[in-house]
Image (cartoon, rainbow, N blue to C red; front, side, top):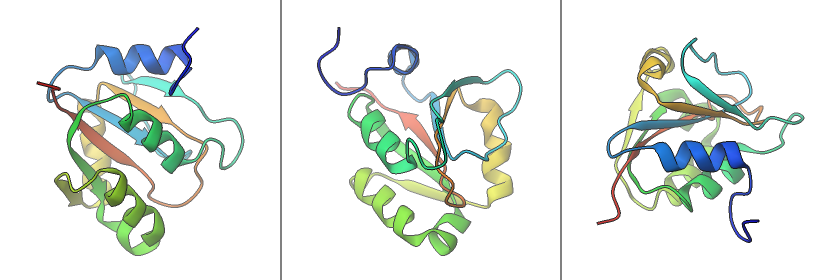
Length: 131
């Protein structure tokens, strides 16, 4: 049994399968996910797990070289936006409209659905390399 960080075997498998420049999303409970995109559904009840808890855990396992969020996140959920920026430690973070964000989802390899109910708490991570 793993003794640290992410314990969910489906999530660990999805992270291990991501290659350089591939896209990996963390979503709130309401984001529509296109058919054909792998979903790791962690949602249990409203708020559990939270978007930020999930992002922190994923970032502890995945090398990230950039991210994309919806413009609306900064305005509607500013605390989540600022904490997302902090967790991504100054990496490039592109802002697009929520409609443009949803249009990117068919290109995402995996979407992790959380129990987050705060609006626009979604991020697409672009995988980096550790060398």
